[in-house]
Length: 144
Image 1: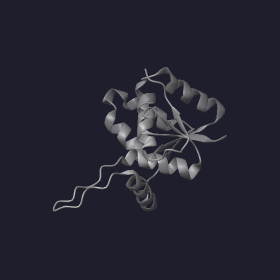
Image 2: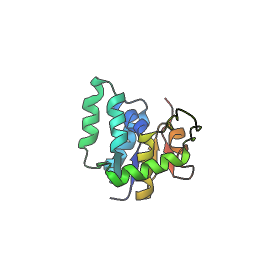
Image 3: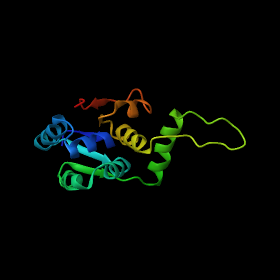
Image 4: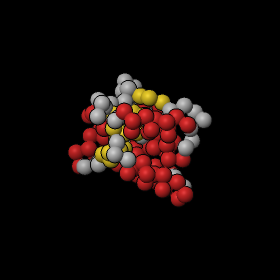
């Protein structure tokens, strides 16, 4: 293996539904060259939720590829990804009923995995990743 890419939920969805030609071409190239495709568990969960039932077989095919690796979210990862998200989330105002900060668990897990591995994030929505880390390497899928 020569390295890899961390796929966020948008990239997983793009590949599964065939939103662009690039997603499928990237997967084929990854197989030929031996690039590992890491799917953070929370991003995978979001992709399962967002995909139509008719697309599930394609998601299962992606998971069965020898270059695909699902990265689990354990207790340490949950804490560390929450800290990534917390650092970028606007803090709610103090008051009688304190609102909870809104954050993107899926993107936070992708950023954590990318930081840990030193690999770029492949995404279809760069804003979600950049909101959490403006410096992490990102490869953007083209718009359809």
